[in-house]
Structure formats: C-alpha cells, structure tokens
Image (cartoon, rainbow over all chains, first blue to last red; front, side):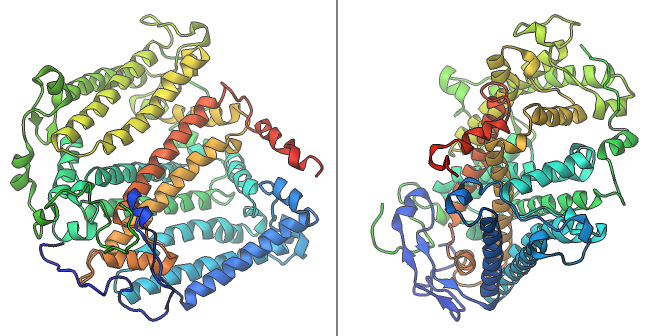
Length: 306
Length: 311
C-alpha cells in the first residue's frame, strides 16, 4: 500500500456514508494479540436491517414460546428438553391449507417470519454494499443459502402439495428430518447432486484451510493485506503462488483464489438444493434404484477381491 | 502489545511479525512467475539437507519441486495406485468403466486381527494400498515442510495437511489398532466407500446423534460459510478505488454485523475452523465402537442429570 496509496488520516474510523451509523468505535486492543481486528462498531442501522431483526425476533419468539408452552412454561423442563422440543409443520391432512394453531399453524407463522427475515437480510447486505460503493457479492453468496432454504421449506412442499414435507423447527427435529429424507428416498449417498454438494462442502473446507494457512504463514510479508496485494503483489503473494506451483504444479493469485472460494461455497448450496428438490415421487423416488439403473452400483455385492 | 490507544486499523499490530520493508516490496501489477521465480529457487534449506548436508533430490521438474520427500511421495503414489487400480479396475467383477465406480478393496476379515495377510489372501491389496498411500501422504506432508522452509514461510499449510492426514491415520490405522482388527478399516472404492460411511453411521444406531459428528459438521458448514463470506468480500472490494483501500472491507462488515474480524483475523479464524472441524470428525469416528456403541442411548445421561431429576 505504501508504494502507491498514501493513507488519509481522520477518515478511517467512520468511513464514507456516515448517515445511519450508530455508536462509536470501541477499541479492544487485546484482540490484536490474536491477529483479530481491535475495533468494534460503529454499525449501520437501516430499514432492511431493522426489518430483518424484527421479523427474525418474531420467529425466535414464537418458536421458543410454542416450545415453552409444550412443557407448561416450566423453565427447568424447557432447559432439559430444549434439544428435543419442536414446532411441527401441519400434517398431510391439511395439505397447503391453514390448520389450527397447535396443529401446524404456529409452524406456518414461524416459517413466514423466518423467510421474511432472511429476505430482508439479503436486502441489507445488498443495499449496504451498493451504498459503500463495493459490489454486492456477499449478498450474491447469501443467495445460495437462500435457495437451499427456500427449496427445503417452501418450494418442495408447495410442489408436493403439503407442508408436512418441511422440517419441523427444533434442533433434534432438523437432524431427524435430514436422516429421514435420506432413508425415505433410498439413501442419499447415491444422489449425484448430494455427491456434488458434499464435494463442494469438503472442497470449501479444503480451500479455506489452504488459503487461510497460506496467508497465515505469510503474515510477516504482509500477505494478509489482500486488497493491496491484488493491486500490487509483494513478496508475500509471490511466495504464496510459488508454494502451490512447486507443491501441486499450478497456483491461483491473490484475486483468483477468492473466485475459487466464492464458486465452491456457492455451488455447495445450489447443488444441494437441486438434490433435495429432485427427491420426491414426481422425480426420483429411490436413489439406490437410480444408482443401479445408472450403472454405478449393483444390487448384489460383488465377490471379495484379494 | 496491548496499549489502550486506538491504532490505525489498517495495520493490525504485528510489530513483532511483519518484517521491515515488506510493504515496500509491492509492485503495481506484480511480477510474472518467469520474472520472480529464479530469485526464490535456491539450493538447500530442506529437512534432508539440514540433517545430512545435501539433498540428492533438491531440484525442480517443470513447475514441481521434488526433494527427498517428493521422491518418497512419488514412490508411494506409484505403488499405491498400481495396487488399487490393478485389483479394483482390472481384476474387478464388472467391465472396466463399471469397476471404476463399483470396484472395491475390502480390508482383511475379522479373524485376521492385526496381522499382515499374504499375497492372494483376502485383504492383501487393501493392506498394500493403505501402506503405500500412508507413505505417499506422509511424504507429501514433509514435502510441504520442505517448500515452506525454502520459501521462508510459516508451516501452517503443512499443519493443515497434517490434520487431514490424521483423519486418514485415525480411520485406517489408529482405530483398527485400538479395536484389534484391520477389518475395522474403511473399504476403498468410489461407491463402496459411500456404503461404508452410510453403514458405519447406522451401525452405531444414528450418527446424527453423535455430538462430535455434530461439531464436525458445524466445522464443515462453518468453513463453507466463512469461505463464502471471505471470498465474496474480497471480490466485492477488489475493484474499489477509494482512498481507504482495504478498509472498506472492514467498514462493510462493521456496518452489517457490528464487527469485522480483520484481514489477518479472517485467515486465522478460517484456518482454526477448518482444522477444528476435521479434528472433531476424527474424534467422532474414533469413539464409535471403542467407547461408545450407540449414539442414541449415549444421551441417556442427559435425562438423569441430578439437577432436573424432578422434572
């Protein structure tokens, strides 16, 4: 940075577009000993931010209150059973209609507020990036998670004609739904989009470890100042590139590693959403059978090879 | 280190690590590999040459650095993939393209215990493949240390690879040894290894109830989330041309979620998240069948905790 971009003191803490910011910068210098930024706040209060927090708060309130009512508002029982309490979606009997509150109505209300909250959060990320003059890629990345959420909670149940296909709101309930949808559709391990999603999930973890490890190992050359390294690569980035060139024969650069990162993480959610959506009687009822028909697996195990 | 005065947030206080003049070496647009690579191609500075004065494989082949450990790694790769390919694909029960997906190498049967099996007995190819793969992975790990030494960097990349290598060792060596039979190792093969993972989960009733599995999955999803957030943030600001440079990234995150972990912090956090998730996954595998046989009844302790016995 020092080579071509002189600092502009006085402009740093609040930055451009101060309107709507609340609070003052709080300094916790001890954080710098761990390499973390020492400044907390100020933060921006905007329409979309407030809307996201209000609707998200309503979701949390209704969810927790319904679960608390299931244990007669006993706080100890609530703590004991917190992981297994759940707010169930309507049964198939009600289809897409609105059932009595205790038979799925609360679930519809919860899901409505959760969806509104997520969409408002997308707008918050999008508009703030636009206002600050940077591109809204964080919102674009969030779109992958939104698509996965929407397919699981809204699109697939709508297509199948019943809200009962959605996961219940609850911690154990979410794990059970995941387990059951895999078993019901003949083992998700044979679902090629599940395979792709897992590939991108593990691949994202791998890329994160490779990139983060590389940059951490090169902090003494200032390689972590990535905006500056993109404009004017220094010896830190040169070493990062040479490490991977010498290790595995090719390398990214300070800009393109973040393209790899973005697409790997984005595709994890998108391929997962496709795999979930196809798992219904209209498309694929049994992924094991699909694997047999595709010729990648056989109903009878082969003889043991020495 | 920790004064109470607010510092310039552009330069987190690494006074003890950022070397003098590192920032002044930056060249607008950067140098090409052809321009800068010769400067870094020095002889020596490897593990082998530190111990024995000279590394016989201290050279490059095309873009690849070889080194003593590269030689070991290549040997392990050639032997391991030969065993795997020959036994699953050429000797497999179906046609060659079908064997690519459905071919499998099973570990030795349970009766064998921890002994080595002979040529032609069940499990021979599995043992050979695992042996040579382990040698190849260890060589690769040491080679990353060599390259880090040559480039005068930290050893973080090798540590990260060591974490995933520890997963391989936990699954194929440590857990089978703890349980006393190679039979506990996982099956090699494209589709069969998926079957093994699926069966392994249900053999201990339901792996979703394994808390270390849950922490591991949280680490994986958290890593993907951090990667998306970091990658998209850098891309979003890459073409920003304001006077604050990289600070716009911190401002964006402070504006949206109050705190920005910072340019160095995100890489430290990401590295710890990715490695921590994998280490927890190792634990969830190692405990299954050794200390815990059933992850559903594992939670019985929860309902019998004394402080809510009356509920």
